[in-house]
Length: 93
Image (cartoon, rainbow, N blue to C red; front, side, top):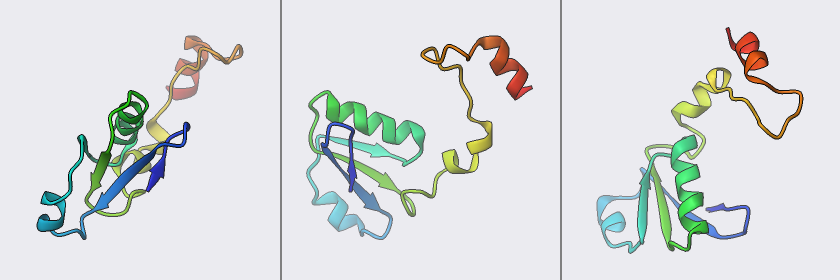
């Protein structure tokens, strides 16, 4: 299980579940993939009042492409006064 910052629960369904158990589960939203996009989508759905939300992943929750791209994910953080687009470009190129 995964909990959002507000404490709401998100069900994580692994590939080990057989198709019958997945088919018999009732969820309001089903998110495929446990990478950054999938988990953020699940959190936003729950925070918007959509429940229950399930995330289906082919292996472990931590086994996703975002994990392997960790050195290639970068952004400018507007709330950080020392960050800027120029600093981002200098850091990443």
